[in-house]
Length: 302
Image (cartoon, rainbow, N blue to C red):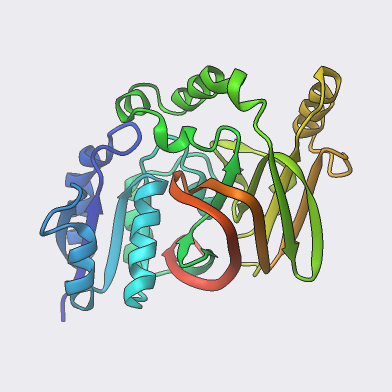
C-alpha cells in the first residue's frame, strides 16, 4: 500500500527559498515511496492549510512543512486542535530558524536531509508549551523588542534575513529600553515579583537567532520549560552591568532571573503583548503556561 505525504510550503517565509525546495522534495519523497500532495500557505482561503489539515489529515501518513518557525507554529496549533498525531518533517526556511537549531543541533540543514529523515521513518517526540489555549514550539515572550519578530516587514526579512530583526531592534531601542512591566510569576510553588524589561519562556537553545548561556542546557524533550526575566535597569551603570551579565551568561546576576518549570502563572497589572514563536500572541493580563510533554512527533536523526 502506497504511503502519502502532505507537503505544506510557505514561499514567503524568511528568505523565500521554500518554493525553490519544492521540486527536489517532491522528487526525493516520491523516490522514497510517497505519493506527495503539495499545498501552499496563501492565507485565509477555502483551501487554507488549516482547512486541508482539518478535513484530510487522516488521508496522510506524514506531514512535511517547508517554511519558518511561524509557519510551524500555525501547523502545530492546528494539529493539537484536531488531535492529529501526524509525524512532521520540518524544513526550516525562516529568518532565525530557532526551533530547527535545537531539533537538529546544527545551524543549517538541507531539504534533502529532512526528506531522508522522513523516508527513514525515524522520529523523536518533542515537548510543547501551552500558553492559555494556544501552543508554542520554542518561545513565548513579552516586553521590549518582542513585537519586532512579527512587525518586521516580510520583504525586509526576505532581503536580509536575521539582520532585519537587528535593524528593527535598533530603530526601537530609544523607546523600548524604557519599557517597564510589573509582573508576578508563580511557577511550581515558587513566587517572584518585580519590574521587568523583557521576559520569555523557552524550549530551545536559540531565541531570536541567538544562543544564550541561560538556555544552553535546554532540551526539546526533558519535560521542562525555561524561564528568563530581565530586570529594568535604573541608570546607565545598571544598564551596562545588565548587558555584561547577559553577554557572559551570569546566572547569579541580580538583573536576570532564570528557572526551569513545568507550570507557571504570569499576572500583570495591565494587558501585555506577547509573541509566540515569532507570531502575534495577543494581549493578556494573566497567562498560564505549562509543559506539554512529547506532544509533537518530528522526523530527525535519532
